[in-house]
Image (cartoon, rainbow, N blue to C red; front, side, top):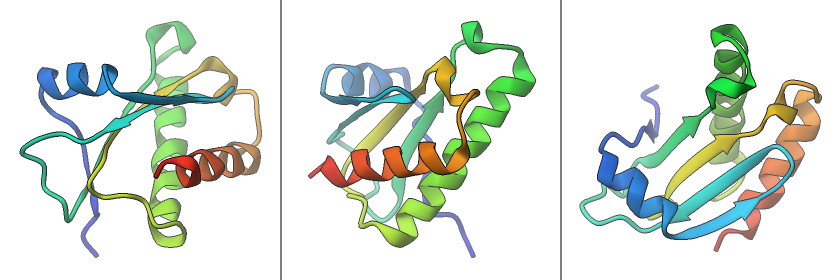
Length: 113
């Protein structure tokens, strides 16, 4: 099965999203909004982990967790495919259980309408 997730690629896309709507919790900050010239049949989402969080192994672990959560969210929640998302991870993601993080992110994505 082909993935329905597509990463943001251009610097302008990131800058435009940072100027739009934002939801934050103790694990991540989610920027979201409409982008022009976007493919609406795929989910436009990117994950960012800062170098302050840890070494490459820890940052990649966070990204793997986020990708797994988003793949489940696409199946279980009706995510808006006309929006683009930018998910910026916080250091608390390393210390907490996967199920708690997943529940919190599901609640935040349900708030986005």
